[in-house]
Image (tube, rainbow, N blue to C red; front, side, top):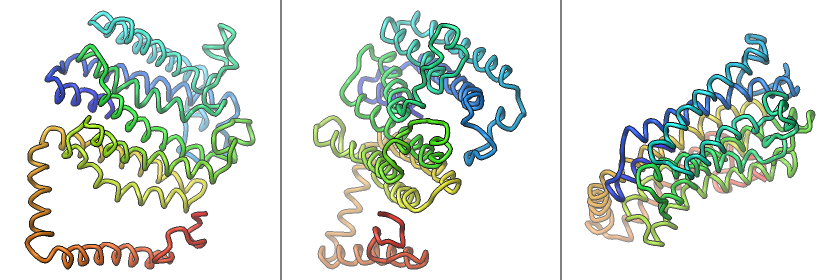
Length: 341
Protein backbone atom coordinates (compact mmCIF):
# COMPACT_ATOMS: atom_id res chain seq x y z
CA UNK A 1 0.00 0.00 0.00
CA UNK A 2 2.94 2.38 0.56
CA UNK A 3 3.83 2.38 -3.15
CA UNK A 4 0.22 3.15 -4.05
CA UNK A 5 0.26 6.16 -1.73
CA UNK A 6 3.46 7.48 -3.35
CA UNK A 7 2.02 7.01 -6.84
CA UNK A 8 -1.33 8.60 -5.97
CA UNK A 9 0.36 11.55 -4.30
CA UNK A 10 2.58 12.20 -7.33
CA UNK A 11 -0.47 12.15 -9.58
CA UNK A 12 -2.65 14.36 -7.41
CA UNK A 13 0.04 16.98 -6.80
CA UNK A 14 1.70 17.21 -10.21
CA UNK A 15 -0.24 14.93 -12.57
CA UNK A 16 3.11 13.19 -13.01
CA UNK A 17 2.78 9.45 -12.47
CA UNK A 18 3.86 6.58 -14.70
CA UNK A 19 1.94 3.46 -13.73
CA UNK A 20 4.63 1.29 -15.34
CA UNK A 21 7.43 2.75 -13.21
CA UNK A 22 5.34 2.57 -10.03
CA UNK A 23 4.36 -1.02 -10.77
CA UNK A 24 7.99 -1.97 -11.35
CA UNK A 25 8.99 -0.51 -7.99
CA UNK A 26 6.06 -2.38 -6.42
CA UNK A 27 7.51 -5.62 -7.85
CA UNK A 28 10.89 -4.71 -6.35
CA UNK A 29 9.27 -4.01 -2.97
CA UNK A 30 7.32 -7.29 -3.00
CA UNK A 31 10.38 -9.34 -3.93
CA UNK A 32 12.42 -7.63 -1.23
CA UNK A 33 9.69 -8.29 1.34
CA UNK A 34 9.46 -11.96 0.40
CA UNK A 35 13.24 -12.33 0.46
CA UNK A 36 13.41 -10.64 3.87
CA UNK A 37 10.71 -12.91 5.31
CA UNK A 38 12.45 -16.03 4.02
CA UNK A 39 15.80 -14.91 5.41
CA UNK A 40 14.19 -14.12 8.79
CA UNK A 41 12.67 -17.61 8.77
CA UNK A 42 16.13 -19.10 8.24
CA UNK A 43 18.17 -16.80 10.50
CA UNK A 44 15.83 -16.83 13.52
CA UNK A 45 15.90 -20.63 13.45
CA UNK A 46 19.68 -21.02 13.28
CA UNK A 47 20.08 -18.38 16.00
CA UNK A 48 17.73 -20.28 18.29
CA UNK A 49 14.93 -17.70 18.36
CA UNK A 50 12.36 -19.96 16.70
CA UNK A 51 11.80 -22.99 18.92
CA UNK A 52 8.80 -25.04 19.97
CA UNK A 53 8.02 -22.21 22.41
CA UNK A 54 7.30 -19.77 19.56
CA UNK A 55 3.93 -18.05 20.09
CA UNK A 56 3.76 -16.33 16.70
CA UNK A 57 2.51 -17.79 13.42
CA UNK A 58 4.22 -21.00 12.34
CA UNK A 59 7.44 -20.75 10.34
CA UNK A 60 8.54 -23.32 7.79
CA UNK A 61 12.11 -23.81 9.07
CA UNK A 62 11.03 -23.97 12.70
CA UNK A 63 8.40 -26.60 11.87
CA UNK A 64 10.89 -28.68 9.88
CA UNK A 65 8.99 -28.27 6.62
CA UNK A 66 12.04 -26.78 4.87
CA UNK A 67 15.72 -27.24 5.63
CA UNK A 68 17.66 -24.10 6.72
CA UNK A 69 20.03 -24.24 3.73
CA UNK A 70 17.14 -24.55 1.31
CA UNK A 71 15.41 -21.57 2.90
CA UNK A 72 18.62 -19.50 2.72
CA UNK A 73 19.06 -20.34 -0.97
CA UNK A 74 15.42 -19.43 -1.71
CA UNK A 75 15.92 -16.09 0.02
CA UNK A 76 19.06 -15.42 -2.04
CA UNK A 77 17.28 -16.18 -5.32
CA UNK A 78 14.38 -13.88 -4.50
CA UNK A 79 16.71 -11.05 -3.46
CA UNK A 80 18.76 -11.56 -6.63
CA UNK A 81 15.57 -11.05 -8.63
CA UNK A 82 14.88 -7.91 -6.61
CA UNK A 83 18.37 -6.59 -7.44
CA UNK A 84 17.71 -7.15 -11.16
CA UNK A 85 14.49 -5.13 -10.92
CA UNK A 86 16.30 -2.46 -8.92
CA UNK A 87 18.97 -2.10 -11.62
CA UNK A 88 16.20 -1.62 -14.16
CA UNK A 89 14.67 1.14 -12.01
CA UNK A 90 18.02 2.92 -11.78
CA UNK A 91 18.46 2.75 -15.56
CA UNK A 92 14.94 4.17 -16.07
CA UNK A 93 15.94 7.46 -14.50
CA UNK A 94 16.15 6.67 -10.79
CA UNK A 95 19.83 7.55 -10.72
CA UNK A 96 21.95 7.62 -7.58
CA UNK A 97 19.08 8.15 -5.06
CA UNK A 98 17.24 5.03 -6.23
CA UNK A 99 20.52 3.08 -6.45
CA UNK A 100 21.21 3.90 -2.80
CA UNK A 101 17.63 2.93 -1.87
CA UNK A 102 17.97 -0.41 -3.67
CA UNK A 103 21.30 -1.13 -1.96
CA UNK A 104 19.89 -0.19 1.47
CA UNK A 105 16.85 -2.41 0.97
CA UNK A 106 18.85 -5.47 -0.10
CA UNK A 107 21.41 -5.03 2.68
CA UNK A 108 18.64 -4.47 5.21
CA UNK A 109 16.87 -7.63 4.03
CA UNK A 110 19.76 -9.82 5.19
CA UNK A 111 20.99 -7.59 8.03
CA UNK A 112 17.60 -7.34 9.76
CA UNK A 113 18.00 -10.73 11.45
CA UNK A 114 21.59 -11.32 10.36
CA UNK A 115 22.95 -14.83 10.73
CA UNK A 116 25.89 -16.78 9.33
CA UNK A 117 24.66 -16.50 5.73
CA UNK A 118 25.29 -14.45 3.65
CA UNK A 119 26.85 -11.71 5.82
CA UNK A 120 29.05 -14.22 7.60
CA UNK A 121 30.93 -14.79 4.33
CA UNK A 122 32.23 -11.20 4.45
CA UNK A 123 32.84 -11.09 8.20
CA UNK A 124 29.61 -9.31 9.10
CA UNK A 125 27.73 -12.26 10.58
CA UNK A 126 27.50 -10.45 13.92
CA UNK A 127 25.35 -7.65 12.46
CA UNK A 128 21.64 -7.85 13.24
CA UNK A 129 19.28 -4.88 13.17
CA UNK A 130 16.50 -6.71 15.01
CA UNK A 131 18.71 -8.28 17.69
CA UNK A 132 20.26 -4.87 18.40
CA UNK A 133 16.80 -3.47 19.14
CA UNK A 134 16.57 -1.31 16.02
CA UNK A 135 13.70 -3.16 14.37
CA UNK A 136 11.29 -0.27 15.03
CA UNK A 137 13.59 2.18 13.25
CA UNK A 138 14.17 -0.31 10.43
CA UNK A 139 10.48 -0.69 9.69
CA UNK A 140 9.91 3.07 9.80
CA UNK A 141 12.63 3.52 7.17
CA UNK A 142 12.12 0.47 4.92
CA UNK A 143 8.33 0.18 5.07
CA UNK A 144 7.50 3.87 5.20
CA UNK A 145 10.07 6.33 3.93
CA UNK A 146 11.65 4.19 1.19
CA UNK A 147 8.57 2.87 -0.66
CA UNK A 148 6.59 6.14 -0.53
CA UNK A 149 9.48 8.49 -1.28
CA UNK A 150 11.12 6.25 -3.89
CA UNK A 151 7.86 5.85 -5.82
CA UNK A 152 7.21 9.58 -5.56
CA UNK A 153 10.76 10.43 -6.67
CA UNK A 154 10.67 8.04 -9.64
CA UNK A 155 7.55 9.82 -10.90
CA UNK A 156 8.41 13.45 -10.14
CA UNK A 157 12.20 13.67 -9.92
CA UNK A 158 12.17 15.24 -6.46
CA UNK A 159 10.74 14.80 -2.96
CA UNK A 160 8.16 17.13 -1.36
CA UNK A 161 7.29 17.82 2.26
CA UNK A 162 3.87 16.25 1.69
CA UNK A 163 5.50 13.03 0.48
CA UNK A 164 7.69 12.97 3.58
CA UNK A 165 4.60 13.40 5.76
CA UNK A 166 2.76 10.48 4.18
CA UNK A 167 5.90 8.32 4.32
CA UNK A 168 6.04 8.94 8.08
CA UNK A 169 2.39 7.95 8.39
CA UNK A 170 2.97 4.65 6.57
CA UNK A 171 6.16 4.10 8.54
CA UNK A 172 4.37 4.64 11.86
CA UNK A 173 1.85 1.96 10.98
CA UNK A 174 4.65 -0.44 10.03
CA UNK A 175 6.56 0.27 13.25
CA UNK A 176 3.36 -0.29 15.25
CA UNK A 177 3.03 -3.76 13.70
CA UNK A 178 6.61 -4.73 14.59
CA UNK A 179 6.07 -3.35 18.11
CA UNK A 180 3.15 -5.74 18.64
CA UNK A 181 5.42 -8.52 17.44
CA UNK A 182 8.07 -7.48 19.99
CA UNK A 183 5.55 -7.38 22.85
CA UNK A 184 4.25 -10.83 21.97
CA UNK A 185 7.72 -12.40 21.78
CA UNK A 186 9.26 -10.62 24.78
CA UNK A 187 9.88 -13.79 26.82
CA UNK A 188 11.51 -15.81 24.03
CA UNK A 189 13.52 -12.75 22.95
CA UNK A 190 14.85 -12.35 26.50
CA UNK A 191 15.99 -15.96 26.54
CA UNK A 192 18.16 -15.58 23.40
CA UNK A 193 19.42 -12.06 24.07
CA UNK A 194 17.38 -10.28 21.40
CA UNK A 195 17.34 -6.68 22.66
CA UNK A 196 14.05 -5.38 21.29
CA UNK A 197 12.42 -2.29 22.78
CA UNK A 198 10.11 -4.55 24.80
CA UNK A 199 13.14 -6.39 26.25
CA UNK A 200 15.26 -3.28 26.85
CA UNK A 201 12.61 -1.04 28.38
CA UNK A 202 9.80 -3.38 29.36
CA UNK A 203 6.38 -4.36 28.06
CA UNK A 204 4.68 -1.25 29.47
CA UNK A 205 7.06 0.97 27.52
CA UNK A 206 6.48 -1.03 24.32
CA UNK A 207 2.72 -0.82 24.70
CA UNK A 208 2.93 2.93 25.14
CA UNK A 209 5.20 3.05 22.10
CA UNK A 210 2.53 1.22 20.12
CA UNK A 211 -0.13 3.69 21.23
CA UNK A 212 2.05 6.68 20.30
CA UNK A 213 2.81 5.24 16.85
CA UNK A 214 -0.87 4.58 16.12
CA UNK A 215 -1.94 8.04 17.28
CA UNK A 216 0.92 9.65 15.32
CA UNK A 217 -0.27 7.94 12.12
CA UNK A 218 -3.51 9.89 12.37
CA UNK A 219 -2.22 13.06 14.05
CA UNK A 220 0.12 13.80 11.15
CA UNK A 221 -2.86 14.50 8.88
CA UNK A 222 -4.13 17.59 10.77
CA UNK A 223 -0.52 18.69 11.25
CA UNK A 224 0.03 18.65 7.50
CA UNK A 225 -3.27 20.46 6.97
CA UNK A 226 -2.27 23.20 9.43
CA UNK A 227 1.00 23.56 7.53
CA UNK A 228 -1.03 23.95 4.29
CA UNK A 229 0.50 20.80 2.83
CA UNK A 230 -2.81 19.05 2.19
CA UNK A 231 -6.44 20.23 1.68
CA UNK A 232 -9.01 19.61 4.41
CA UNK A 233 -10.79 16.71 2.61
CA UNK A 234 -7.57 14.69 2.77
CA UNK A 235 -8.11 14.40 6.53
CA UNK A 236 -11.13 12.16 5.90
CA UNK A 237 -9.18 8.99 6.98
CA UNK A 238 -9.37 10.29 10.56
CA UNK A 239 -12.68 8.43 10.80
CA UNK A 240 -10.66 5.18 10.84
CA UNK A 241 -9.29 6.13 14.26
CA UNK A 242 -12.33 4.38 15.75
CA UNK A 243 -10.77 1.12 14.61
CA UNK A 244 -7.30 2.19 15.73
CA UNK A 245 -8.59 2.99 19.22
CA UNK A 246 -9.97 -0.54 19.49
CA UNK A 247 -6.59 -2.03 18.53
CA UNK A 248 -4.74 0.19 21.02
CA UNK A 249 -7.01 -1.00 23.84
CA UNK A 250 -6.57 -4.62 22.80
CA UNK A 251 -2.78 -4.34 22.77
CA UNK A 252 -2.83 -2.83 26.27
CA UNK A 253 -5.15 -5.59 27.48
CA UNK A 254 -3.73 -8.75 25.90
CA UNK A 255 -0.50 -10.72 26.32
CA UNK A 256 1.40 -13.47 24.52
CA UNK A 257 -0.16 -15.41 21.65
CA UNK A 258 -3.43 -13.49 22.01
CA UNK A 259 -1.65 -10.50 20.47
CA UNK A 260 -1.51 -12.28 17.10
CA UNK A 261 -4.95 -10.93 16.28
CA UNK A 262 -3.65 -7.41 16.98
CA UNK A 263 -0.98 -7.90 14.32
CA UNK A 264 -3.65 -8.49 11.72
CA UNK A 265 -5.88 -5.85 13.28
CA UNK A 266 -3.19 -3.17 12.98
CA UNK A 267 -2.48 -4.14 9.38
CA UNK A 268 -6.22 -3.94 8.70
CA UNK A 269 -6.34 -0.42 10.12
CA UNK A 270 -3.46 0.61 7.84
CA UNK A 271 -5.16 -0.84 4.76
CA UNK A 272 -8.51 0.82 5.51
CA UNK A 273 -6.77 4.11 6.32
CA UNK A 274 -4.98 3.94 2.95
CA UNK A 275 -8.13 3.11 1.00
CA UNK A 276 -9.98 6.03 2.58
CA UNK A 277 -6.97 8.26 1.92
CA UNK A 278 -6.94 7.31 -1.76
CA UNK A 279 -10.67 7.96 -2.00
CA UNK A 280 -10.23 11.37 -0.37
CA UNK A 281 -7.35 12.26 -2.71
CA UNK A 282 -9.26 11.45 -5.86
CA UNK A 283 -12.63 12.78 -4.63
CA UNK A 284 -11.61 15.81 -2.58
CA UNK A 285 -14.48 17.98 -3.86
CA UNK A 286 -17.09 15.31 -3.14
CA UNK A 287 -15.71 14.72 0.35
CA UNK A 288 -15.80 18.47 1.05
CA UNK A 289 -19.42 18.72 -0.17
CA UNK A 290 -20.49 15.65 1.81
CA UNK A 291 -18.92 16.92 5.03
CA UNK A 292 -20.48 20.35 4.59
CA UNK A 293 -23.89 18.82 3.88
CA UNK A 294 -23.60 16.65 7.01
CA UNK A 295 -22.63 19.71 9.05
CA UNK A 296 -25.61 21.74 7.77
CA UNK A 297 -28.11 18.96 8.29
CA UNK A 298 -26.98 17.88 11.74
CA UNK A 299 -25.87 21.12 13.35
CA UNK A 300 -27.65 23.98 11.61
CA UNK A 301 -31.02 22.62 10.54
CA UNK A 302 -32.00 21.85 14.14
CA UNK A 303 -30.89 23.62 17.29
CA UNK A 304 -27.05 23.33 17.23
CA UNK A 305 -26.57 22.74 20.96
CA UNK A 306 -29.39 20.21 21.15
CA UNK A 307 -28.07 18.32 18.13
CA UNK A 308 -24.52 18.30 19.45
CA UNK A 309 -25.63 17.11 22.87
CA UNK A 310 -27.69 14.34 21.31
CA UNK A 311 -24.82 13.10 19.15
CA UNK A 312 -22.32 13.19 22.01
CA UNK A 313 -24.78 11.40 24.30
CA UNK A 314 -25.31 8.61 21.78
CA UNK A 315 -21.57 8.31 21.12
CA UNK A 316 -20.45 8.12 24.74
CA UNK A 317 -23.46 5.98 25.64
CA UNK A 318 -22.42 3.44 23.01
CA UNK A 319 -18.86 3.39 24.33
CA UNK A 320 -20.03 2.90 27.92
CA UNK A 321 -22.42 0.10 26.88
CA UNK A 322 -19.71 -1.63 24.85
CA UNK A 323 -17.23 -1.49 27.73
CA UNK A 324 -19.84 -2.71 30.25
CA UNK A 325 -20.57 -5.70 27.99
CA UNK A 326 -16.87 -6.61 28.20
CA UNK A 327 -16.84 -6.34 31.95
CA UNK A 328 -14.75 -3.17 31.85
CA UNK A 329 -15.14 0.12 33.70
CA UNK A 330 -17.65 2.05 31.50
CA UNK A 331 -16.16 5.46 32.35
CA UNK A 332 -12.45 4.96 33.00
CA UNK A 333 -10.50 3.32 30.13
CA UNK A 334 -7.41 3.18 32.33
CA UNK A 335 -9.05 1.29 35.18
CA UNK A 336 -7.05 -1.51 36.76
CA UNK A 337 -9.45 -4.12 35.44
CA UNK A 338 -8.50 -3.13 31.89
CA UNK A 339 -4.82 -3.82 32.59
CA UNK A 340 -4.06 -0.43 31.06
CA UNK A 341 -1.53 0.76 33.64
